[in-house]
Image 1 (cartoon, rainbow, N blue to C red):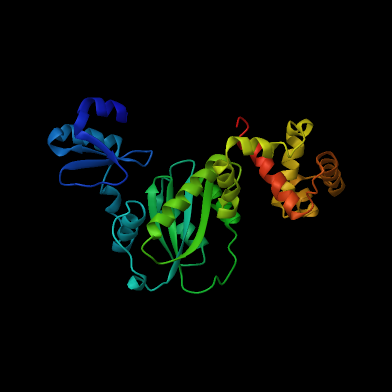
Image 2: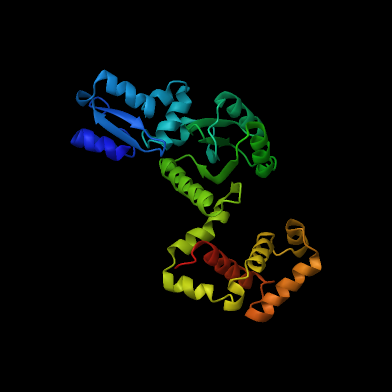
Length: 302
Protein backbone atom coordinates (compact mmCIF):
# COMPACT_ATOMS: atom_id res chain seq x y z
CA UNK A 1 0.00 0.00 0.00
CA UNK A 2 2.74 2.49 0.96
CA UNK A 3 4.65 1.70 -2.25
CA UNK A 4 1.54 2.46 -4.29
CA UNK A 5 1.11 5.76 -2.44
CA UNK A 6 4.77 6.62 -3.13
CA UNK A 7 4.21 6.05 -6.84
CA UNK A 8 1.25 8.43 -6.73
CA UNK A 9 2.58 11.21 -4.47
CA UNK A 10 6.29 10.77 -5.34
CA UNK A 11 8.50 13.29 -3.48
CA UNK A 12 5.50 14.64 -1.58
CA UNK A 13 5.42 11.46 0.55
CA UNK A 14 8.03 10.71 3.22
CA UNK A 15 8.38 8.11 5.97
CA UNK A 16 9.88 8.62 9.42
CA UNK A 17 10.12 7.05 12.86
CA UNK A 18 8.19 9.99 14.29
CA UNK A 19 6.28 12.93 12.76
CA UNK A 20 7.95 16.30 12.18
CA UNK A 21 7.01 19.49 10.30
CA UNK A 22 3.37 18.84 11.13
CA UNK A 23 2.51 22.24 9.65
CA UNK A 24 3.73 21.01 6.24
CA UNK A 25 2.83 17.31 6.28
CA UNK A 26 -0.28 15.34 7.20
CA UNK A 27 0.94 12.25 9.05
CA UNK A 28 -0.59 8.78 9.25
CA UNK A 29 0.25 5.66 11.25
CA UNK A 30 0.19 2.25 9.50
CA UNK A 31 -0.73 -1.12 11.05
CA UNK A 32 2.99 -1.88 11.07
CA UNK A 33 3.41 1.08 13.47
CA UNK A 34 5.35 3.23 10.99
CA UNK A 35 4.60 6.85 10.12
CA UNK A 36 4.31 8.39 6.68
CA UNK A 37 3.61 12.01 5.84
CA UNK A 38 2.18 13.67 2.73
CA UNK A 39 2.50 17.36 2.00
CA UNK A 40 -0.78 19.05 2.83
CA UNK A 41 -0.84 21.04 -0.41
CA UNK A 42 -0.85 17.73 -2.33
CA UNK A 43 -3.93 16.40 -0.53
CA UNK A 44 -7.53 17.17 -1.32
CA UNK A 45 -10.20 16.96 1.39
CA UNK A 46 -11.50 13.76 -0.20
CA UNK A 47 -8.01 12.19 -0.26
CA UNK A 48 -7.42 13.11 3.38
CA UNK A 49 -10.72 11.50 4.34
CA UNK A 50 -9.89 8.33 2.41
CA UNK A 51 -6.41 8.03 3.96
CA UNK A 52 -7.92 8.60 7.42
CA UNK A 53 -10.23 5.65 6.87
CA UNK A 54 -7.31 3.39 5.87
CA UNK A 55 -4.72 4.58 8.40
CA UNK A 56 -4.63 6.25 11.80
CA UNK A 57 -4.18 10.03 11.45
CA UNK A 58 -1.47 11.34 13.72
CA UNK A 59 -2.94 13.02 16.77
CA UNK A 60 -6.24 11.14 16.96
CA UNK A 61 -4.73 8.54 19.30
CA UNK A 62 -3.90 11.37 21.73
CA UNK A 63 -7.42 12.77 21.97
CA UNK A 64 -8.58 10.58 24.86
CA UNK A 65 -5.33 10.76 26.84
CA UNK A 66 -4.70 12.61 30.04
CA UNK A 67 -1.79 15.06 30.09
CA UNK A 68 0.33 12.43 31.84
CA UNK A 69 -0.48 9.76 29.26
CA UNK A 70 0.22 12.14 26.37
CA UNK A 71 3.58 13.06 27.92
CA UNK A 72 4.64 9.41 28.25
CA UNK A 73 3.31 8.49 24.80
CA UNK A 74 5.39 11.24 23.19
CA UNK A 75 8.45 10.32 25.27
CA UNK A 76 8.35 6.57 24.62
CA UNK A 77 6.79 6.06 21.20
CA UNK A 78 7.73 9.30 19.44
CA UNK A 79 10.90 10.03 21.46
CA UNK A 80 9.82 13.62 21.92
CA UNK A 81 10.13 15.67 25.10
CA UNK A 82 12.48 15.26 28.05
CA UNK A 83 12.23 13.86 31.55
CA UNK A 84 13.85 14.94 34.80
CA UNK A 85 14.02 12.78 37.96
CA UNK A 86 12.11 15.32 40.09
CA UNK A 87 9.26 15.58 37.60
CA UNK A 88 7.17 12.79 39.19
CA UNK A 89 6.44 11.50 42.67
CA UNK A 90 8.09 8.15 41.92
CA UNK A 91 11.81 7.56 41.36
CA UNK A 92 11.80 4.34 39.32
CA UNK A 93 9.55 2.63 36.81
CA UNK A 94 9.18 -0.59 34.88
CA UNK A 95 7.59 -1.19 31.48
CA UNK A 96 5.11 -4.04 31.18
CA UNK A 97 4.36 -4.45 27.49
CA UNK A 98 1.43 -6.47 26.18
CA UNK A 99 0.42 -7.92 22.83
CA UNK A 100 -2.84 -9.61 21.82
CA UNK A 101 -3.21 -11.68 18.67
CA UNK A 102 -6.64 -10.11 18.05
CA UNK A 103 -7.70 -6.43 18.33
CA UNK A 104 -9.22 -5.49 21.69
CA UNK A 105 -12.73 -4.24 20.98
CA UNK A 106 -13.53 -2.86 24.43
CA UNK A 107 -10.44 -0.85 25.28
CA UNK A 108 -11.72 0.65 28.51
CA UNK A 109 -12.77 -2.71 29.94
CA UNK A 110 -9.41 -4.25 29.01
CA UNK A 111 -7.49 -1.35 30.54
CA UNK A 112 -9.41 -1.59 33.79
CA UNK A 113 -9.00 -5.38 33.88
CA UNK A 114 -5.24 -5.48 33.41
CA UNK A 115 -4.62 -2.59 35.82
CA UNK A 116 -6.74 -4.32 38.46
CA UNK A 117 -4.61 -7.48 38.13
CA UNK A 118 -1.38 -5.61 38.90
CA UNK A 119 -0.56 -4.63 42.49
CA UNK A 120 1.01 -1.24 41.69
CA UNK A 121 -0.17 2.03 40.21
CA UNK A 122 0.38 2.10 36.46
CA UNK A 123 0.17 4.55 33.59
CA UNK A 124 -1.59 2.83 30.69
CA UNK A 125 -0.74 3.57 27.04
CA UNK A 126 -2.19 2.05 23.89
CA UNK A 127 0.19 1.60 20.96
CA UNK A 128 -2.41 -0.02 18.68
CA UNK A 129 -5.69 -1.92 19.02
CA UNK A 130 -3.76 -4.99 20.12
CA UNK A 131 -0.65 -3.70 21.90
CA UNK A 132 0.52 -1.20 24.46
CA UNK A 133 2.47 -0.68 27.65
CA UNK A 134 1.82 -0.18 31.34
CA UNK A 135 4.35 2.01 33.11
CA UNK A 136 4.61 0.59 36.62
CA UNK A 137 5.57 3.32 39.10
CA UNK A 138 7.97 2.24 41.85
CA UNK A 139 9.00 3.98 45.04
CA UNK A 140 9.97 1.03 47.21
CA UNK A 141 10.76 -2.66 46.93
CA UNK A 142 8.12 -4.94 45.46
CA UNK A 143 5.77 -5.83 48.29
CA UNK A 144 4.32 -8.97 46.74
CA UNK A 145 4.93 -11.53 44.04
CA UNK A 146 3.01 -11.16 40.79
CA UNK A 147 2.08 -14.29 38.85
CA UNK A 148 2.13 -12.96 35.31
CA UNK A 149 1.32 -16.32 33.74
CA UNK A 150 -1.95 -16.32 35.65
CA UNK A 151 -2.65 -12.78 34.44
CA UNK A 152 -2.26 -13.85 30.81
CA UNK A 153 -4.61 -16.80 31.39
CA UNK A 154 -7.23 -14.50 32.92
CA UNK A 155 -7.00 -11.94 30.11
CA UNK A 156 -7.07 -14.63 27.44
CA UNK A 157 -10.19 -16.10 28.97
CA UNK A 158 -11.98 -12.78 29.48
CA UNK A 159 -11.18 -11.20 26.11
CA UNK A 160 -10.97 -14.27 23.86
CA UNK A 161 -7.52 -13.41 22.55
CA UNK A 162 -4.09 -14.90 23.10
CA UNK A 163 -2.10 -12.57 25.37
CA UNK A 164 1.66 -12.09 25.75
CA UNK A 165 3.51 -9.92 28.27
CA UNK A 166 7.06 -8.62 28.50
CA UNK A 167 8.19 -7.69 32.01
CA UNK A 168 10.94 -5.11 31.72
CA UNK A 169 13.80 -4.16 34.00
CA UNK A 170 13.41 -1.59 36.78
CA UNK A 171 14.80 1.75 35.59
CA UNK A 172 15.49 5.01 37.47
CA UNK A 173 13.88 8.05 35.87
CA UNK A 174 16.44 9.50 33.47
CA UNK A 175 16.80 11.18 30.09
CA UNK A 176 17.55 7.90 28.31
CA UNK A 177 14.34 6.19 29.47
CA UNK A 178 12.85 6.37 25.96
CA UNK A 179 15.86 4.59 24.51
CA UNK A 180 15.69 1.88 27.19
CA UNK A 181 12.01 1.35 26.38
CA UNK A 182 12.75 0.89 22.67
CA UNK A 183 15.43 -1.67 23.48
CA UNK A 184 12.98 -3.67 25.60
CA UNK A 185 10.39 -3.30 22.84
CA UNK A 186 12.83 -4.99 20.44
CA UNK A 187 13.44 -7.75 22.98
CA UNK A 188 9.69 -8.33 23.25
CA UNK A 189 9.42 -8.64 19.46
CA UNK A 190 12.28 -11.17 19.49
CA UNK A 191 10.45 -13.18 22.13
CA UNK A 192 7.20 -13.23 20.17
CA UNK A 193 9.06 -14.31 17.02
CA UNK A 194 11.36 -16.98 18.45
CA UNK A 195 9.63 -18.13 21.66
CA UNK A 196 6.10 -18.30 20.31
CA UNK A 197 5.02 -21.00 22.77
CA UNK A 198 5.80 -18.72 25.70
CA UNK A 199 3.33 -16.15 27.07
CA UNK A 200 5.46 -14.12 29.49
CA UNK A 201 8.95 -12.88 28.70
CA UNK A 202 11.78 -11.28 30.65
CA UNK A 203 15.32 -10.40 29.63
CA UNK A 204 16.73 -13.73 30.80
CA UNK A 205 14.33 -15.50 28.41
CA UNK A 206 15.44 -13.43 25.41
CA UNK A 207 19.17 -13.19 26.21
CA UNK A 208 20.17 -16.62 24.77
CA UNK A 209 18.54 -15.67 21.44
CA UNK A 210 20.36 -12.32 21.41
CA UNK A 211 23.66 -14.09 22.08
CA UNK A 212 23.08 -16.58 19.27
CA UNK A 213 22.12 -13.85 16.81
CA UNK A 214 25.41 -12.05 17.48
CA UNK A 215 27.52 -15.19 16.98
CA UNK A 216 29.04 -15.75 13.56
CA UNK A 217 27.79 -18.72 11.55
CA UNK A 218 31.01 -20.74 11.93
CA UNK A 219 30.86 -20.56 15.71
CA UNK A 220 27.15 -21.47 15.73
CA UNK A 221 27.90 -24.52 13.60
CA UNK A 222 30.57 -25.56 16.10
CA UNK A 223 28.07 -25.04 18.90
CA UNK A 224 25.59 -27.38 17.19
CA UNK A 225 28.21 -30.13 17.24
CA UNK A 226 28.05 -30.15 21.04
CA UNK A 227 25.06 -32.38 20.40
CA UNK A 228 26.06 -35.67 18.71
CA UNK A 229 24.88 -35.84 15.09
CA UNK A 230 22.77 -38.95 15.75
CA UNK A 231 20.84 -37.03 18.44
CA UNK A 232 20.35 -33.76 16.54
CA UNK A 233 17.30 -35.14 14.74
CA UNK A 234 15.74 -36.53 17.93
CA UNK A 235 13.38 -33.61 18.54
CA UNK A 236 11.56 -35.36 21.35
CA UNK A 237 14.78 -35.86 23.31
CA UNK A 238 15.97 -32.27 22.71
CA UNK A 239 12.62 -30.83 23.75
CA UNK A 240 12.73 -32.97 26.90
CA UNK A 241 16.18 -31.64 27.77
CA UNK A 242 15.10 -28.09 27.03
CA UNK A 243 12.23 -28.36 29.53
CA UNK A 244 14.66 -29.89 32.06
CA UNK A 245 16.98 -26.88 31.69
CA UNK A 246 14.08 -24.43 31.92
CA UNK A 247 12.97 -26.18 35.12
CA UNK A 248 16.24 -25.19 36.85
CA UNK A 249 17.70 -28.70 36.40
CA UNK A 250 15.00 -30.05 38.70
CA UNK A 251 14.04 -33.53 37.47
CA UNK A 252 10.79 -33.72 39.46
CA UNK A 253 9.48 -30.35 38.21
CA UNK A 254 10.50 -31.09 34.63
CA UNK A 255 8.80 -34.50 34.74
CA UNK A 256 5.57 -32.87 35.92
CA UNK A 257 5.69 -30.34 33.08
CA UNK A 258 6.34 -33.13 30.57
CA UNK A 259 3.69 -35.47 32.05
CA UNK A 260 6.46 -38.04 32.27
CA UNK A 261 7.60 -40.44 34.97
CA UNK A 262 10.64 -39.15 36.82
CA UNK A 263 12.63 -42.29 36.04
CA UNK A 264 11.94 -41.94 32.31
CA UNK A 265 13.27 -38.40 32.31
CA UNK A 266 16.31 -39.48 34.33
CA UNK A 267 16.97 -42.20 31.72
CA UNK A 268 16.93 -39.66 28.86
CA UNK A 269 19.30 -37.36 30.73
CA UNK A 270 21.75 -40.20 31.38
CA UNK A 271 21.46 -41.28 27.74
CA UNK A 272 22.47 -37.83 26.54
CA UNK A 273 25.37 -37.59 29.02
CA UNK A 274 26.68 -40.98 27.86
CA UNK A 275 26.55 -40.14 24.15
CA UNK A 276 27.71 -36.51 24.35
CA UNK A 277 30.21 -36.68 27.19
CA UNK A 278 28.69 -33.49 28.64
CA UNK A 279 27.37 -33.57 32.20
CA UNK A 280 24.16 -31.58 31.81
CA UNK A 281 23.34 -32.04 35.49
CA UNK A 282 25.74 -29.20 36.21
CA UNK A 283 25.50 -25.53 35.24
CA UNK A 284 28.23 -25.19 32.61
CA UNK A 285 27.25 -28.32 30.74
CA UNK A 286 23.58 -27.34 30.90
CA UNK A 287 24.19 -23.80 29.57
CA UNK A 288 26.30 -25.02 26.65
CA UNK A 289 23.80 -27.70 25.68
CA UNK A 290 20.83 -25.35 26.08
CA UNK A 291 22.40 -22.84 23.67
CA UNK A 292 23.14 -25.66 21.22
CA UNK A 293 19.51 -26.81 21.34
CA UNK A 294 18.26 -23.24 20.74
CA UNK A 295 20.74 -22.93 17.87
CA UNK A 296 19.37 -26.08 16.23
CA UNK A 297 15.80 -24.95 16.82
CA UNK A 298 15.99 -21.34 15.63
CA UNK A 299 19.05 -21.16 13.36
CA UNK A 300 19.08 -24.56 11.60
CA UNK A 301 20.52 -23.26 8.33
CA UNK A 302 23.45 -21.23 9.68
